[in-house]
Length: 630
Image 1 (cartoon, rainbow, N blue to C red):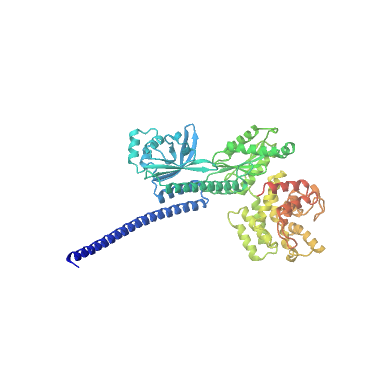
Image 2: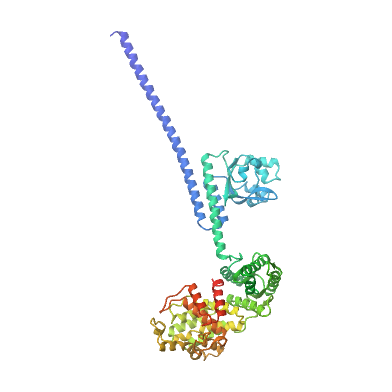
Protein backbone atom coordinates (compact mmCIF):
# COMPACT_ATOMS: atom_id res chain seq x y z
CA UNK A 1 0.00 0.00 0.00
CA UNK A 2 1.41 3.34 -1.02
CA UNK A 3 1.60 6.60 0.89
CA UNK A 4 -1.51 8.01 -0.74
CA UNK A 5 -3.54 4.90 -0.02
CA UNK A 6 -2.64 5.16 3.64
CA UNK A 7 -3.61 8.81 3.63
CA UNK A 8 -7.00 7.99 2.09
CA UNK A 9 -7.63 5.32 4.70
CA UNK A 10 -6.74 7.72 7.48
CA UNK A 11 -9.13 10.35 6.04
CA UNK A 12 -11.94 7.76 5.84
CA UNK A 13 -11.36 6.86 9.46
CA UNK A 14 -11.51 10.53 10.44
CA UNK A 15 -14.75 10.94 8.41
CA UNK A 16 -16.24 7.95 10.23
CA UNK A 17 -15.24 9.38 13.60
CA UNK A 18 -16.73 12.79 12.70
CA UNK A 19 -19.90 11.12 11.45
CA UNK A 20 -20.17 9.12 14.66
CA UNK A 21 -19.61 12.23 16.81
CA UNK A 22 -22.17 14.20 14.80
CA UNK A 23 -24.72 11.42 15.04
CA UNK A 24 -24.10 11.14 18.78
CA UNK A 25 -24.51 14.89 19.12
CA UNK A 26 -27.79 14.75 17.22
CA UNK A 27 -29.01 11.91 19.41
CA UNK A 28 -28.09 13.84 22.56
CA UNK A 29 -29.80 16.96 21.24
CA UNK A 30 -32.93 15.00 20.33
CA UNK A 31 -32.88 13.38 23.76
CA UNK A 32 -32.52 16.76 25.44
CA UNK A 33 -35.34 18.23 23.38
CA UNK A 34 -37.52 15.19 24.08
CA UNK A 35 -36.85 15.48 27.82
CA UNK A 36 -37.65 19.21 27.69
CA UNK A 37 -40.95 18.47 25.94
CA UNK A 38 -41.76 15.77 28.51
CA UNK A 39 -40.98 18.15 31.36
CA UNK A 40 -43.23 20.82 29.83
CA UNK A 41 -45.99 18.29 29.25
CA UNK A 42 -45.65 16.97 32.83
CA UNK A 43 -45.83 20.54 34.13
CA UNK A 44 -48.90 21.23 32.02
CA UNK A 45 -50.57 17.99 33.09
CA UNK A 46 -49.68 18.73 36.73
CA UNK A 47 -51.24 22.17 36.39
CA UNK A 48 -54.33 20.66 34.76
CA UNK A 49 -54.51 18.04 37.51
CA UNK A 50 -54.18 20.73 40.16
CA UNK A 51 -56.93 22.75 38.50
CA UNK A 52 -59.15 19.68 38.18
CA UNK A 53 -58.51 18.83 41.82
CA UNK A 54 -59.49 22.35 42.91
CA UNK A 55 -62.55 22.13 40.70
CA UNK A 56 -63.55 18.84 42.28
CA UNK A 57 -63.02 20.27 45.77
CA UNK A 58 -65.18 23.24 44.85
CA UNK A 59 -67.95 21.01 43.53
CA UNK A 60 -67.71 18.85 46.66
CA UNK A 61 -68.01 21.97 48.82
CA UNK A 62 -71.17 22.98 46.96
CA UNK A 63 -72.58 19.48 47.33
CA UNK A 64 -71.93 19.55 51.08
CA UNK A 65 -73.68 22.91 51.33
CA UNK A 66 -76.67 21.64 49.37
CA UNK A 67 -77.09 18.74 51.75
CA UNK A 68 -76.91 20.91 54.85
CA UNK A 69 -80.52 22.19 54.46
CA UNK A 70 -79.24 25.75 54.94
CA UNK A 71 -81.17 28.70 53.48
CA UNK A 72 -80.72 29.32 49.76
CA UNK A 73 -78.94 32.63 50.38
CA UNK A 74 -76.28 30.84 52.48
CA UNK A 75 -75.79 28.17 49.82
CA UNK A 76 -75.42 30.72 47.01
CA UNK A 77 -72.96 32.90 48.95
CA UNK A 78 -70.85 29.87 49.86
CA UNK A 79 -70.95 28.79 46.22
CA UNK A 80 -69.59 32.02 44.78
CA UNK A 81 -66.99 32.25 47.54
CA UNK A 82 -65.73 28.79 46.56
CA UNK A 83 -65.50 29.79 42.93
CA UNK A 84 -63.72 33.04 43.67
CA UNK A 85 -61.41 31.67 46.34
CA UNK A 86 -60.38 28.29 44.98
CA UNK A 87 -60.38 28.97 41.25
CA UNK A 88 -58.85 32.43 41.27
CA UNK A 89 -61.52 34.59 39.64
CA UNK A 90 -61.35 38.23 40.65
CA UNK A 91 -65.07 38.48 41.22
CA UNK A 92 -67.94 36.08 40.93
CA UNK A 93 -71.65 36.49 41.51
CA UNK A 94 -75.03 34.92 40.97
CA UNK A 95 -77.59 37.22 39.43
CA UNK A 96 -81.31 36.64 39.07
CA UNK A 97 -83.12 37.69 35.92
CA UNK A 98 -85.82 40.31 36.50
CA UNK A 99 -88.10 42.19 34.17
CA UNK A 100 -89.86 45.43 35.13
CA UNK A 101 -90.60 48.84 33.66
CA UNK A 102 -86.84 49.43 33.45
CA UNK A 103 -86.47 46.48 31.10
CA UNK A 104 -84.68 43.15 31.25
CA UNK A 105 -81.73 42.95 33.67
CA UNK A 106 -79.86 40.76 36.16
CA UNK A 107 -80.06 41.56 39.90
CA UNK A 108 -77.16 40.32 42.04
CA UNK A 109 -78.30 37.94 44.83
CA UNK A 110 -74.89 36.61 45.94
CA UNK A 111 -71.34 37.74 45.26
CA UNK A 112 -67.72 37.21 46.29
CA UNK A 113 -64.62 39.30 45.83
CA UNK A 114 -64.51 43.05 45.41
CA UNK A 115 -67.10 43.34 42.68
CA UNK A 116 -66.09 46.52 40.77
CA UNK A 117 -63.89 47.31 43.79
CA UNK A 118 -65.12 48.42 47.22
CA UNK A 119 -63.79 51.95 46.67
CA UNK A 120 -65.76 52.15 43.46
CA UNK A 121 -68.96 51.05 45.20
CA UNK A 122 -68.43 53.54 48.01
CA UNK A 123 -67.96 56.28 45.41
CA UNK A 124 -71.47 55.56 44.15
CA UNK A 125 -72.93 54.76 47.62
CA UNK A 126 -74.26 51.35 46.67
CA UNK A 127 -74.10 47.74 47.76
CA UNK A 128 -73.53 44.74 45.47
CA UNK A 129 -77.22 43.86 45.87
CA UNK A 130 -78.10 47.27 44.40
CA UNK A 131 -76.25 46.51 41.17
CA UNK A 132 -78.26 45.74 38.05
CA UNK A 133 -76.32 44.18 35.22
CA UNK A 134 -77.46 45.43 31.81
CA UNK A 135 -75.29 44.24 29.00
CA UNK A 136 -74.33 46.27 25.92
CA UNK A 137 -75.84 45.24 22.61
CA UNK A 138 -77.79 42.55 24.43
CA UNK A 139 -80.40 42.54 21.70
CA UNK A 140 -77.75 41.12 19.42
CA UNK A 141 -77.09 38.25 21.82
CA UNK A 142 -80.53 36.85 22.73
CA UNK A 143 -79.02 33.61 23.99
CA UNK A 144 -77.17 35.42 26.77
CA UNK A 145 -80.27 36.90 28.36
CA UNK A 146 -82.73 34.06 27.78
CA UNK A 147 -80.38 31.48 29.24
CA UNK A 148 -79.52 29.52 26.07
CA UNK A 149 -75.81 30.17 25.70
CA UNK A 150 -72.64 31.30 27.48
CA UNK A 151 -71.75 34.94 26.87
CA UNK A 152 -68.12 36.17 26.96
CA UNK A 153 -66.99 39.77 26.62
CA UNK A 154 -63.95 41.99 27.19
CA UNK A 155 -66.02 45.17 27.01
CA UNK A 156 -65.59 46.25 30.66
CA UNK A 157 -66.11 49.91 29.69
CA UNK A 158 -69.68 49.48 28.42
CA UNK A 159 -70.51 47.10 31.26
CA UNK A 160 -69.57 49.77 33.82
CA UNK A 161 -71.57 52.36 31.83
CA UNK A 162 -74.64 50.12 31.87
CA UNK A 163 -74.42 49.47 35.61
CA UNK A 164 -73.71 53.10 36.50
CA UNK A 165 -75.48 55.15 33.82
CA UNK A 166 -74.53 58.47 35.46
CA UNK A 167 -70.80 57.78 35.32
CA UNK A 168 -68.69 59.87 32.96
CA UNK A 169 -66.90 58.26 30.04
CA UNK A 170 -63.54 59.31 31.50
CA UNK A 171 -64.24 57.62 34.84
CA UNK A 172 -65.52 54.46 33.15
CA UNK A 173 -62.47 54.40 30.86
CA UNK A 174 -60.13 54.96 33.80
CA UNK A 175 -61.72 52.11 35.73
CA UNK A 176 -61.74 49.67 32.78
CA UNK A 177 -58.05 50.35 32.10
CA UNK A 178 -56.96 50.06 35.74
CA UNK A 179 -59.02 47.04 36.83
CA UNK A 180 -57.36 43.66 36.78
CA UNK A 181 -60.50 42.18 35.21
CA UNK A 182 -59.94 41.73 31.49
CA UNK A 183 -63.14 39.85 30.66
CA UNK A 184 -66.37 38.60 32.12
CA UNK A 185 -68.37 35.46 31.43
CA UNK A 186 -72.10 34.82 31.83
CA UNK A 187 -73.16 31.22 32.31
CA UNK A 188 -76.95 30.74 32.16
CA UNK A 189 -78.83 29.21 35.12
CA UNK A 190 -82.16 27.43 34.73
CA UNK A 191 -84.82 26.55 37.30
CA UNK A 192 -87.99 24.58 36.63
CA UNK A 193 -87.33 24.69 32.86
CA UNK A 194 -87.09 28.48 32.75
CA UNK A 195 -84.24 30.98 32.88
CA UNK A 196 -83.40 31.79 36.53
CA UNK A 197 -80.43 34.09 35.90
CA UNK A 198 -76.70 33.81 35.37
CA UNK A 199 -73.45 32.87 37.02
CA UNK A 200 -71.13 35.80 36.32
CA UNK A 201 -67.33 35.63 36.71
CA UNK A 202 -64.71 38.33 36.13
CA UNK A 203 -61.35 36.97 34.96
CA UNK A 204 -57.80 38.31 34.57
CA UNK A 205 -57.67 36.50 31.21
CA UNK A 206 -59.15 37.85 28.02
CA UNK A 207 -60.03 34.41 26.68
CA UNK A 208 -61.40 31.39 28.50
CA UNK A 209 -60.15 27.92 27.62
CA UNK A 210 -62.53 25.22 26.51
CA UNK A 211 -61.85 23.29 29.74
CA UNK A 212 -62.65 26.40 31.76
CA UNK A 213 -65.97 26.90 29.98
CA UNK A 214 -66.81 23.22 30.45
CA UNK A 215 -66.12 23.52 34.16
CA UNK A 216 -68.18 26.69 34.52
CA UNK A 217 -71.05 24.91 32.77
CA UNK A 218 -70.75 22.02 35.22
CA UNK A 219 -70.49 24.50 38.09
CA UNK A 220 -73.67 26.21 36.91
CA UNK A 221 -75.48 22.86 36.89
CA UNK A 222 -74.51 22.41 40.54
CA UNK A 223 -75.90 25.85 41.34
CA UNK A 224 -79.15 24.95 39.60
CA UNK A 225 -79.31 21.79 41.72
CA UNK A 226 -78.61 23.85 44.85
CA UNK A 227 -81.48 26.18 44.02
CA UNK A 228 -83.81 23.22 43.43
CA UNK A 229 -82.82 21.47 46.67
CA UNK A 230 -83.07 24.67 48.72
CA UNK A 231 -86.49 25.31 47.24
CA UNK A 232 -87.57 21.77 48.15
CA UNK A 233 -86.30 22.20 51.71
CA UNK A 234 -88.26 25.44 51.97
CA UNK A 235 -91.39 23.78 50.57
CA UNK A 236 -91.15 20.91 53.06
CA UNK A 237 -90.54 23.36 55.88
CA UNK A 238 -93.56 25.42 54.89
CA UNK A 239 -95.72 22.31 54.60
CA UNK A 240 -94.69 21.31 58.12
CA UNK A 241 -95.75 24.63 59.65
CA UNK A 242 -98.59 25.81 57.45
CA UNK A 243 -102.21 24.82 57.06
CA UNK A 244 -102.82 23.28 53.66
CA UNK A 245 -106.25 24.81 53.13
CA UNK A 246 -105.62 28.43 54.14
CA UNK A 247 -101.87 28.96 53.87
CA UNK A 248 -101.80 30.29 57.43
CA UNK A 249 -99.56 28.80 60.08
CA UNK A 250 -100.86 25.62 61.70
CA UNK A 251 -101.47 24.74 65.35
CA UNK A 252 -98.00 23.19 65.76
CA UNK A 253 -96.22 26.34 64.64
CA UNK A 254 -98.50 28.54 66.74
CA UNK A 255 -97.76 26.56 69.90
CA UNK A 256 -94.00 26.76 69.27
CA UNK A 257 -94.12 30.47 68.46
CA UNK A 258 -96.17 31.51 71.50
CA UNK A 259 -93.66 29.84 73.81
CA UNK A 260 -90.83 31.83 72.24
CA UNK A 261 -92.91 34.99 72.33
CA UNK A 262 -93.66 34.48 76.04
CA UNK A 263 -89.93 34.13 76.75
CA UNK A 264 -89.15 37.28 74.75
CA UNK A 265 -92.05 39.12 76.37
CA UNK A 266 -90.85 38.29 79.88
CA UNK A 267 -87.26 39.23 79.06
CA UNK A 268 -88.19 42.60 77.58
CA UNK A 269 -91.15 43.22 79.91
CA UNK A 270 -93.36 43.72 76.87
CA UNK A 271 -96.93 42.48 76.57
CA UNK A 272 -98.45 40.64 73.65
CA UNK A 273 -102.08 39.97 72.81
CA UNK A 274 -103.82 36.89 71.44
CA UNK A 275 -107.04 37.14 69.43
CA UNK A 276 -109.21 34.05 69.03
CA UNK A 277 -111.59 33.94 66.03
CA UNK A 278 -114.38 31.42 65.47
CA UNK A 279 -116.48 31.38 62.28
CA UNK A 280 -120.18 31.65 63.14
CA UNK A 281 -122.68 29.02 61.92
CA UNK A 282 -120.23 26.82 59.98
CA UNK A 283 -122.48 23.77 60.47
CA UNK A 284 -125.40 25.70 59.03
CA UNK A 285 -123.32 26.74 56.00
CA UNK A 286 -122.22 23.13 55.44
CA UNK A 287 -125.77 21.81 55.79
CA UNK A 288 -127.36 24.37 53.43
CA UNK A 289 -124.67 24.92 50.80
CA UNK A 290 -122.32 21.97 51.21
CA UNK A 291 -118.84 21.53 52.68
CA UNK A 292 -117.18 23.23 49.70
CA UNK A 293 -118.83 26.49 50.68
CA UNK A 294 -117.85 25.92 54.31
CA UNK A 295 -114.25 25.72 53.09
CA UNK A 296 -114.75 28.94 51.10
CA UNK A 297 -115.92 30.70 54.26
CA UNK A 298 -112.90 29.44 56.20
CA UNK A 299 -110.55 30.60 53.44
CA UNK A 300 -112.26 34.00 53.41
CA UNK A 301 -111.38 34.53 57.08
CA UNK A 302 -107.80 33.48 56.37
CA UNK A 303 -107.52 36.10 53.62
CA UNK A 304 -108.87 38.77 55.99
CA UNK A 305 -106.22 37.85 58.56
CA UNK A 306 -103.47 38.04 55.93
CA UNK A 307 -104.62 41.49 54.78
CA UNK A 308 -105.01 42.93 58.27
CA UNK A 309 -101.79 41.66 59.85
CA UNK A 310 -98.42 43.33 60.37
CA UNK A 311 -95.29 41.49 59.25
CA UNK A 312 -94.52 40.54 62.87
CA UNK A 313 -98.02 39.24 63.65
CA UNK A 314 -98.65 35.48 63.53
CA UNK A 315 -102.00 34.18 62.30
CA UNK A 316 -102.73 30.46 62.57
CA UNK A 317 -105.58 28.12 61.83
CA UNK A 318 -106.01 26.09 65.00
CA UNK A 319 -108.35 23.57 63.38
CA UNK A 320 -111.86 23.52 61.94
CA UNK A 321 -113.26 27.05 61.93
CA UNK A 322 -111.01 28.42 64.70
CA UNK A 323 -108.10 30.83 64.26
CA UNK A 324 -105.65 32.55 66.60
CA UNK A 325 -103.60 35.69 66.01
CA UNK A 326 -100.59 36.78 68.11
CA UNK A 327 -99.91 40.53 68.23
CA UNK A 328 -96.38 41.10 69.63
CA UNK A 329 -95.97 44.31 71.64
CA UNK A 330 -99.72 45.04 71.75
CA UNK A 331 -101.71 45.48 74.98
CA UNK A 332 -105.40 44.67 75.48
CA UNK A 333 -106.60 48.11 74.34
CA UNK A 334 -104.71 47.76 71.07
CA UNK A 335 -105.82 44.15 70.77
CA UNK A 336 -109.48 45.19 70.99
CA UNK A 337 -108.96 47.73 68.19
CA UNK A 338 -107.34 45.09 65.93
CA UNK A 339 -109.99 42.49 66.78
CA UNK A 340 -112.82 44.89 65.93
CA UNK A 341 -111.15 45.74 62.63
CA UNK A 342 -110.88 42.00 61.82
CA UNK A 343 -114.53 41.44 62.79
CA UNK A 344 -115.74 44.22 60.51
CA UNK A 345 -113.52 43.04 57.65
CA UNK A 346 -114.91 39.49 57.91
CA UNK A 347 -118.48 40.77 57.94
CA UNK A 348 -117.82 42.94 54.88
CA UNK A 349 -116.63 40.12 52.61
CA UNK A 350 -119.33 39.02 50.11
CA UNK A 351 -119.27 35.32 49.28
CA UNK A 352 -120.98 33.50 46.42
CA UNK A 353 -124.37 32.01 47.50
CA UNK A 354 -123.54 32.40 51.20
CA UNK A 355 -123.68 36.19 51.17
CA UNK A 356 -121.91 37.58 54.24
CA UNK A 357 -120.35 35.62 57.10
CA UNK A 358 -119.58 36.67 60.68
CA UNK A 359 -117.20 35.55 63.41
CA UNK A 360 -117.00 35.66 67.20
CA UNK A 361 -113.76 36.95 68.69
CA UNK A 362 -112.04 36.82 72.08
CA UNK A 363 -109.05 38.88 73.26
CA UNK A 364 -106.56 38.32 76.10
CA UNK A 365 -103.15 39.82 76.86
CA UNK A 366 -100.05 38.16 78.27
CA UNK A 367 -98.85 39.72 81.56
CA UNK A 368 -102.16 41.55 81.80
CA UNK A 369 -104.71 38.76 82.01
CA UNK A 370 -102.30 35.92 82.82
CA UNK A 371 -98.61 35.08 82.88
CA UNK A 372 -99.24 31.42 81.98
CA UNK A 373 -99.56 30.51 78.29
CA UNK A 374 -102.07 27.70 78.73
CA UNK A 375 -104.24 29.84 80.95
CA UNK A 376 -103.98 32.78 78.55
CA UNK A 377 -105.25 30.63 75.67
CA UNK A 378 -108.06 29.31 77.87
CA UNK A 379 -109.08 32.89 78.62
CA UNK A 380 -109.06 33.71 74.90
CA UNK A 381 -111.26 30.70 74.21
CA UNK A 382 -113.71 31.57 76.96
CA UNK A 383 -113.93 35.17 75.77
CA UNK A 384 -114.52 33.94 72.22
CA UNK A 385 -117.33 31.64 73.33
CA UNK A 386 -118.76 34.41 75.49
CA UNK A 387 -119.13 36.34 72.23
CA UNK A 388 -121.04 33.38 70.79
CA UNK A 389 -123.34 33.11 73.82
CA UNK A 390 -124.08 36.83 73.63
CA UNK A 391 -125.30 36.72 70.03
CA UNK A 392 -122.16 36.16 67.90
CA UNK A 393 -120.47 38.64 65.54
CA UNK A 394 -118.83 40.54 68.40
CA UNK A 395 -115.53 40.97 70.27
CA UNK A 396 -115.18 40.12 73.97
CA UNK A 397 -112.24 41.00 76.20
CA UNK A 398 -111.23 38.20 78.57
CA UNK A 399 -112.04 38.55 82.22
CA UNK A 400 -109.09 38.73 84.64
CA UNK A 401 -108.04 35.46 86.24
CA UNK A 402 -109.96 34.81 89.45
CA UNK A 403 -108.05 34.95 92.71
CA UNK A 404 -108.11 31.16 92.95
CA UNK A 405 -107.46 29.38 89.64
CA UNK A 406 -108.39 25.80 88.82
CA UNK A 407 -104.70 24.92 88.89
CA UNK A 408 -104.38 26.12 92.47
CA UNK A 409 -107.44 24.12 93.51
CA UNK A 410 -105.98 21.00 91.86
CA UNK A 411 -102.57 21.55 93.45
CA UNK A 412 -104.06 21.97 96.91
CA UNK A 413 -106.17 18.83 96.39
CA UNK A 414 -103.18 16.73 95.34
CA UNK A 415 -101.12 18.01 98.27
CA UNK A 416 -103.96 17.14 100.66
CA UNK A 417 -104.33 13.61 99.20
CA UNK A 418 -100.59 12.91 99.24
CA UNK A 419 -99.60 14.54 102.53
CA UNK A 420 -102.49 12.95 104.44
CA UNK A 421 -101.96 9.55 102.79
CA UNK A 422 -105.53 9.25 101.55
CA UNK A 423 -104.36 6.70 98.96
CA UNK A 424 -102.06 3.67 99.42
CA UNK A 425 -98.93 5.20 97.92
CA UNK A 426 -95.48 4.62 99.41
CA UNK A 427 -94.19 7.44 101.60
CA UNK A 428 -91.14 8.18 99.41
CA UNK A 429 -93.23 8.68 96.25
CA UNK A 430 -95.82 10.72 98.14
CA UNK A 431 -93.15 13.02 99.50
CA UNK A 432 -91.47 13.38 96.09
CA UNK A 433 -94.72 14.36 94.38
CA UNK A 434 -95.70 16.70 97.21
CA UNK A 435 -92.37 18.50 96.95
CA UNK A 436 -92.88 18.88 93.20
CA UNK A 437 -96.26 20.47 93.78
CA UNK A 438 -94.91 22.85 96.38
CA UNK A 439 -92.20 24.21 94.08
CA UNK A 440 -92.49 27.78 92.88
CA UNK A 441 -93.88 28.70 89.46
CA UNK A 442 -96.31 25.81 89.37
CA UNK A 443 -97.85 25.40 85.91
CA UNK A 444 -100.13 23.06 84.01
CA UNK A 445 -97.23 20.82 82.94
CA UNK A 446 -96.39 20.11 86.58
CA UNK A 447 -99.98 19.09 87.25
CA UNK A 448 -99.99 16.78 84.25
CA UNK A 449 -96.74 15.16 85.41
CA UNK A 450 -98.08 14.52 88.92
CA UNK A 451 -101.33 13.09 87.55
CA UNK A 452 -99.44 10.85 85.10
CA UNK A 453 -97.18 9.63 87.91
CA UNK A 454 -100.18 8.66 90.06
CA UNK A 455 -101.91 6.86 87.18
CA UNK A 456 -98.75 4.88 86.40
CA UNK A 457 -98.82 3.39 89.92
CA UNK A 458 -101.81 1.28 88.86
CA UNK A 459 -101.58 1.49 85.04
CA UNK A 460 -97.99 1.13 83.79
CA UNK A 461 -99.20 1.39 80.16
CA UNK A 462 -100.45 4.95 80.71
CA UNK A 463 -98.72 7.05 78.00
CA UNK A 464 -96.49 10.06 78.60
CA UNK A 465 -98.61 13.23 78.49
CA UNK A 466 -101.75 11.11 78.69
CA UNK A 467 -103.42 13.49 81.17
CA UNK A 468 -102.56 16.49 79.04
CA UNK A 469 -104.17 14.88 75.98
CA UNK A 470 -107.34 14.11 77.94
CA UNK A 471 -107.65 17.68 79.18
CA UNK A 472 -107.07 19.07 75.70
CA UNK A 473 -109.74 16.80 74.20
CA UNK A 474 -112.19 17.53 77.02
CA UNK A 475 -111.66 21.31 76.73
CA UNK A 476 -112.27 21.27 72.98
CA UNK A 477 -115.39 19.18 73.46
CA UNK A 478 -116.65 21.47 76.23
CA UNK A 479 -116.46 24.40 73.81
CA UNK A 480 -118.77 22.60 71.39
CA UNK A 481 -121.40 22.52 74.16
CA UNK A 482 -120.87 26.17 75.19
CA UNK A 483 -119.83 25.33 78.75
CA UNK A 484 -118.93 28.31 80.92
CA UNK A 485 -115.37 28.88 82.10
CA UNK A 486 -116.36 27.78 85.60
CA UNK A 487 -117.75 24.49 84.24
CA UNK A 488 -114.65 23.86 82.12
CA UNK A 489 -112.42 24.51 85.13
CA UNK A 490 -114.39 21.95 87.16
CA UNK A 491 -114.10 19.49 84.27
CA UNK A 492 -110.31 19.85 84.19
CA UNK A 493 -109.99 19.23 87.92
CA UNK A 494 -112.32 16.23 87.61
CA UNK A 495 -110.14 14.75 84.83
CA UNK A 496 -107.08 15.04 87.06
CA UNK A 497 -108.88 13.21 89.87
CA UNK A 498 -111.59 10.96 88.44
CA UNK A 499 -109.59 7.73 88.33
CA UNK A 500 -107.81 8.19 91.65
CA UNK A 501 -110.13 5.57 93.16
CA UNK A 502 -108.24 2.95 91.14
CA UNK A 503 -105.36 3.33 93.60
CA UNK A 504 -107.60 1.68 96.18
CA UNK A 505 -108.25 -1.43 94.04
CA UNK A 506 -106.07 -4.55 94.27
CA UNK A 507 -103.29 -4.42 91.64
CA UNK A 508 -103.93 -8.02 90.66
CA UNK A 509 -107.47 -7.04 89.68
CA UNK A 510 -106.27 -4.23 87.41
CA UNK A 511 -103.70 -6.50 85.73
CA UNK A 512 -106.00 -9.49 85.34
CA UNK A 513 -105.92 -11.08 81.87
CA UNK A 514 -108.71 -13.66 82.27
CA UNK A 515 -112.43 -12.72 82.27
CA UNK A 516 -113.61 -10.77 85.32
CA UNK A 517 -115.86 -12.44 87.86
CA UNK A 518 -119.03 -10.78 89.08
CA UNK A 519 -117.22 -9.88 92.30
CA UNK A 520 -114.44 -8.28 90.26
CA UNK A 521 -116.98 -6.22 88.31
CA UNK A 522 -118.63 -5.01 91.47
CA UNK A 523 -115.26 -3.95 92.89
CA UNK A 524 -114.48 -1.96 89.74
CA UNK A 525 -117.92 -0.36 89.76
CA UNK A 526 -117.25 0.94 93.26
CA UNK A 527 -114.11 2.85 92.25
CA UNK A 528 -115.86 6.13 91.28
CA UNK A 529 -117.73 6.04 94.58
CA UNK A 530 -114.50 5.34 96.45
CA UNK A 531 -112.83 8.26 94.65
CA UNK A 532 -115.73 10.60 95.30
CA UNK A 533 -116.63 9.73 98.87
CA UNK A 534 -113.68 8.14 100.61
CA UNK A 535 -110.80 10.08 99.06
CA UNK A 536 -112.20 13.42 97.91
CA UNK A 537 -115.25 14.16 100.06
CA UNK A 538 -113.16 15.27 103.07
CA UNK A 539 -111.59 18.01 100.90
CA UNK A 540 -114.02 20.92 101.16
CA UNK A 541 -112.64 22.93 98.22
CA UNK A 542 -113.80 20.38 95.64
CA UNK A 543 -117.31 19.60 96.89
CA UNK A 544 -118.82 20.63 93.54
CA UNK A 545 -116.34 18.38 91.66
CA UNK A 546 -117.44 15.19 93.43
CA UNK A 547 -120.79 14.71 91.57
CA UNK A 548 -118.97 14.91 88.22
CA UNK A 549 -116.52 12.19 89.23
CA UNK A 550 -119.15 10.00 90.86
CA UNK A 551 -121.24 9.88 87.67
CA UNK A 552 -118.54 9.56 85.00
CA UNK A 553 -119.40 5.88 84.36
CA UNK A 554 -123.13 6.44 83.80
CA UNK A 555 -124.27 5.47 80.30
CA UNK A 556 -126.64 7.43 78.06
CA UNK A 557 -129.04 4.44 77.85
CA UNK A 558 -129.11 3.92 81.64
CA UNK A 559 -126.91 0.81 81.77
CA UNK A 560 -123.99 2.48 83.53
CA UNK A 561 -123.01 2.68 87.19
CA UNK A 562 -123.23 3.39 90.07
CA UNK A 563 -126.80 4.79 89.87
CA UNK A 564 -128.09 3.75 86.40
CA UNK A 565 -128.68 7.37 85.37
CA UNK A 566 -129.56 8.07 81.75
CA UNK A 567 -129.73 10.84 79.17
CA UNK A 568 -129.74 14.43 80.35
CA UNK A 569 -129.74 13.31 84.00
CA UNK A 570 -126.01 12.70 83.60
CA UNK A 571 -123.95 15.92 84.00
CA UNK A 572 -122.43 16.92 80.66
CA UNK A 573 -119.02 17.10 82.34
CA UNK A 574 -119.38 13.44 83.38
CA UNK A 575 -120.40 12.48 79.84
CA UNK A 576 -117.32 14.23 78.43
CA UNK A 577 -115.03 12.41 80.86
CA UNK A 578 -116.53 9.04 79.88
CA UNK A 579 -116.08 9.47 76.12
CA UNK A 580 -112.56 10.93 76.45
CA UNK A 581 -111.49 8.22 78.90
CA UNK A 582 -112.95 5.46 76.69
CA UNK A 583 -111.18 6.76 73.58
CA UNK A 584 -107.79 7.11 75.29
CA UNK A 585 -108.16 3.67 76.89
CA UNK A 586 -108.70 2.11 73.46
CA UNK A 587 -105.35 3.53 72.33
CA UNK A 588 -103.50 1.89 75.25
CA UNK A 589 -102.40 -1.72 75.70
CA UNK A 590 -104.39 -3.46 78.41
CA UNK A 591 -103.72 -6.88 80.03
CA UNK A 592 -106.82 -8.31 78.35
CA UNK A 593 -106.38 -6.71 74.87
CA UNK A 594 -103.86 -4.86 72.70
CA UNK A 595 -104.16 -1.19 71.76
CA UNK A 596 -106.16 -0.30 68.64
CA UNK A 597 -105.51 2.34 66.00
CA UNK A 598 -106.98 5.83 66.11
CA UNK A 599 -109.35 4.92 63.26
CA UNK A 600 -110.60 1.78 65.02
CA UNK A 601 -111.06 3.71 68.27
CA UNK A 602 -113.22 6.32 66.52
CA UNK A 603 -115.33 3.56 64.92
CA UNK A 604 -115.95 2.17 68.40
CA UNK A 605 -116.94 5.63 69.66
CA UNK A 606 -119.51 5.97 66.87
CA UNK A 607 -120.76 2.40 67.37
CA UNK A 608 -121.58 3.20 71.02
CA UNK A 609 -123.58 6.33 70.14
CA UNK A 610 -126.97 6.44 71.91
CA UNK A 611 -125.78 3.62 74.18
CA UNK A 612 -122.82 4.84 76.22
CA UNK A 613 -123.13 8.46 75.10
CA UNK A 614 -125.40 10.60 72.97
CA UNK A 615 -125.06 10.66 69.20
CA UNK A 616 -124.36 14.40 69.28
CA UNK A 617 -121.52 13.92 71.77
CA UNK A 618 -120.04 11.14 69.63
CA UNK A 619 -120.24 13.16 66.41
CA UNK A 620 -118.66 16.24 67.98
CA UNK A 621 -115.89 14.18 69.55
CA UNK A 622 -115.00 12.42 66.30
CA UNK A 623 -114.96 15.78 64.49
CA UNK A 624 -112.52 17.19 67.04
CA UNK A 625 -110.13 14.24 66.85
CA UNK A 626 -110.17 14.17 63.04
CA UNK A 627 -109.92 17.89 62.37
CA UNK A 628 -108.49 19.72 65.34
CA UNK A 629 -106.08 17.53 67.28
CA UNK A 630 -102.56 17.00 65.93
